[in-house]
Amino acid sequence: MKLKLLFALLVVQVSFAQHRTCGMQEKMAQIMSNPTQRQAYLDQQHKFQVELEKIASNKDGNSVNSVIRIPVAVHYPSAGAATATIKSCLRSLAQKQVDILNADYNGTNTDISNWAAVSENYPGTNTGSLDVQFVLATQNHPSGTTLVNGDVAVTFGTEFLTGADEDTTWSGYCNLVVRNIGGGTLGYSPLGGSPSAGMTVVIDNNAFGAIMTGSPVSCTGYVPAAPYNKGRTLTHELGHFFNLDHTFADCDGGNCATSGDRVCDTPSCDEPRYDCNAADSPPDPSVSGNPAVTTCGYLQLTMNYMDYVEDSCMYMFTAGQAARMHAWYNVIASQLTTTALGNEEFLQNQFTLFPNPSKGSFTIQFKDMMNSYSVEVFDVTGQTIYESNYDQSANLVQVIDLNHPTRGVYFVNIKSDKGIVTKKLIIE
Ligand SMILES: [Zn+2]
View: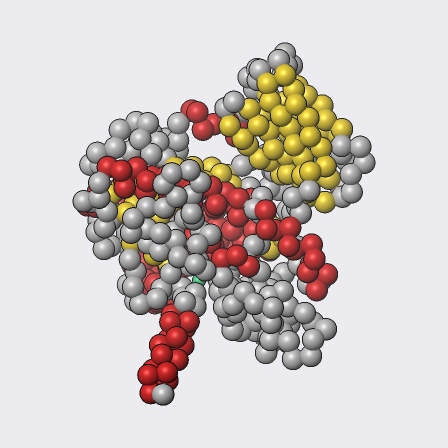
């Protein structure tokens, strides 16, 4: 009997330990206790407000063709003594995680299609994306590292200051540190991070990346553990780096722009959701006492990356969050190194798409000849509305007519032997 009780207690403890815990607030307390860092934080937040107002006052001001490209460096400070095989595996894991980031931040992840079934419960809330390309850096690595041109910016052991969260050797990069954080914390980031200060986003070694295809499917010591095994701890933490607070920051107190999470299209909320079960997700407003209706009186946006739910049931940013992230990017853009990405990654700049927004007929203009390529257009639910292959094309221009599609946000995938690139297309 006693044994059974003990066992029950252990199970309860284990399941609590499995709740998502984020260390952003502790990190911010640390930053605010350092006078220099505090002042730098306040200065950048001031610039942020200016950028946010610019975006708000000029909604079409963000050219959808100006894709943001961010050089990424991944650091495994505890893997200095790892074998060459494991290091190679960890490079693949870094790429896997970067791929997940690109899908989540561009709204091209497949599970965003779940939004269609629940969106009517959230009037005024739309999915949002940053139009960003995260790329593992490959060129002109910082001096003092053993990396050469062509290597991906993935470091092991003492190449990144062990145990520290900042390293100005790597200023100018989006730095991801993967290590055993301990205490059940899955990850942390400053709220509004600064690349010039060499700030980092730290992710626990069992919550980074996802199971890979091919062999090996995971790397010893860095196996993503369910239910945080879809790489979304980083999606969440990097949201903090881009100045997003938790959706459950607080009730909005009547002014959504200055209180709560300061995002007006995320329903006001003051406590996190953890689980992925029927009671919490998706929420059902027709059920009396539904736990997803918060004490602030709103239906909780449990599927948002900035809540605490398990990886498999968070799948979207809102348009308001995307605007905020874009404003933060505008603050830090000049801090990012521009020499770390090789020419082969400039595919994104190899074509432009216009007019955008359009009525459904648009032109793809290539910079260089593409022997063969395919074009796929799909909507936010992932449904393909146009698909065509172009072989041995001698044209630098291709006109595509979608034949009166419904208004909304679409994505255009262009696939060639140089890779795949996705651009957002707005039909109005
Ligand atoms: Zn968080």
